[in-house]
Each structure stands twice: as structure tokens, then as C-alpha cells.
Length: 379
Image (cartoon, rainbow, N blue to C red):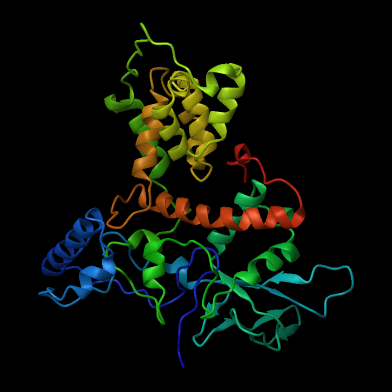
């Protein structure tokens, strides 16, 4: 029985990508389809509820928007590698291996094409994804897109050097997460991915960000730089806090300022914003512009374009708190996203979140702390 398997890291498929032919009629139908579902999400409904309501007047839209993705920029999805083990490896040698580039061939099979190795031609290799193994590898192999693997290595080690990662440990922490269907790992890929992961990959209109290359973002750096320099909304100074007659009292007020600063720096963005609203002491500490510049770099390790030298030289009047809030909102992976400049980094942000789950398991398996998120940007 035919079925699709999905990338162990990003959760997206390796085939079956459908892009609608461009036409004004099709684009208008798509616009209505997505707008209706965006309203449903805003009302707290599930997208599945919309389809079950039975008031659809048009045929379902089951393809991606040609204005957002094209065959040239989704070709990365069709190219794959896999992580497996070779039980015949010499004693003391690494058993886990990464295959050459291959493709998903249906019914759970991953194929690496035959090629010549010097004077000795090598036969085609066939692996069993998430299954019980094959002649090529006795255990399940985990298929992935190469750029997703680079993001995973960067998340774990702070670089993209494969030599810095222990493949045996990585394999040992990933294989227990194989799901019951034998098509992916049990990881938080995101709601849109979970909806698309059926027997076959479903190209959900409005979720094109899932199929957008997370590393090939040529317009991104210039876009961020331009807004940092010209967006007046990001240069407005934060409002002065009037403390007349107010004596903030909280446990944080009894701690040295340096300790409070470090606590805030380690919090997730949403937690910090909530705490700043609840505690006047925290609100005061986080008024510092330098704090937000450092916090933005720590809280957005997936946004390594922020490390670009020219961004570090932006004018001194940039309000980094507003810059952080703006970037946090604009890069949030969400249904209906269509900004060509940011859609790639939104997918990268989603994949980074998945990789953090694996990085945590990897670090615990090695019995060592996770790599400092301040190491991002090196390659």
C-alpha cells in the first residue's frame, strides 16, 4: 500500500507538491478560501471544523500558491539523505552513517542511486524509513532534507560542521520517537504540518511557509537592514516611566540588579513580556535599550542574519525593544503567511523549535549542558 514518509526534522514530505496554475480566477478563489479559514482561526476554531461545516460553495483548494512557491524553489524538498546504522562497522568505530543524496520512492522506501566509486561501480541502495530495517541497514533509517539537518547541527553545536556531532548519540535519541504510523517522528512540527501529514502529503493553501526553503533567504538581510534604518516606528523612544509616588515591591526588588538582568535574559520572549507586565521591577530593568539588543540576539538564535556586520552598525536611535517585538510578530510561522521576504525565516524558526526538542534529548544523553545560544551565527 502506497504512502508518504516525512522529514524527521521538519516534518514535510519529499514528493507530491502541487502548485496551482496561475490565473485570476484561481487566485481569487484561493483568496476567499484562505480568508475564510483565517477568520475561523481568529474565532478559535480548528481548520477541520470549517471543512465539516458543509457550507463550502466551491471545490476544495488543494495546492500551493504559485506567487509564493514555484518549482524552482521547492526542489529542495525532493532531495533527501537519511541517518541509519551499520551494525558491521568495526569495533570502536561510529556505527551511525549519513547516506548520499537520494529520493523517497513510496511505501516507506528511501533510494540512493547507484554511482561509480573509483573503478568499482556501486549498486543502488534501498533503505526502510522508520521501519524495521533492510539489508542495507538493520534498523530504521531517518530521512531528512539536508538544510534541515544543517539547522539541527547548528542548534546542537552552534556550527554546521558534521564532525562536531556524535551521530551514534543522535541516532539513539531520534529512533525512539518514531511514530505509530511509521512516517515521521513524534515531535512538535506545528499544527499546519500535522494537518498535512496524512497518508499522502496535503498541500494546504495558506501553509506555503512549510514548503519554503529555510536557508535560501536572499532578500532577508536587506529587508531587516532597511527597516532598521528607515522605519520610523522602530525609532520612537520608549515612554518614560513615571515612578512618582510608586514604590515597586516584589521579590525581584530584593535581588542585585545584575542577577535580575540575567534572569530576564534567560526567559523566553513571551514569558519576559508577561513578567514585565506583572512586575514593575522587571519593567524597569527591561527599559534599557542594550538589554533588548542582547535579548533579541539570544532569543532569536534562528535569525542569524541579525549577526550581519552591517546590521550591528545601525544608527544609535534604533529602539531594540520595538525591533524585537516587530521581528517576533513578523517571523511567527502562521497560516496565511505570504510575505516573500520573511516566509523562509518563519519556516526556519519553526524547524529550529523542533530541533531544540532533539537538542535537549541529545544533550541529556551526553550528560552535558546544551550549547549556549549565543554561539549562533558561526558556520
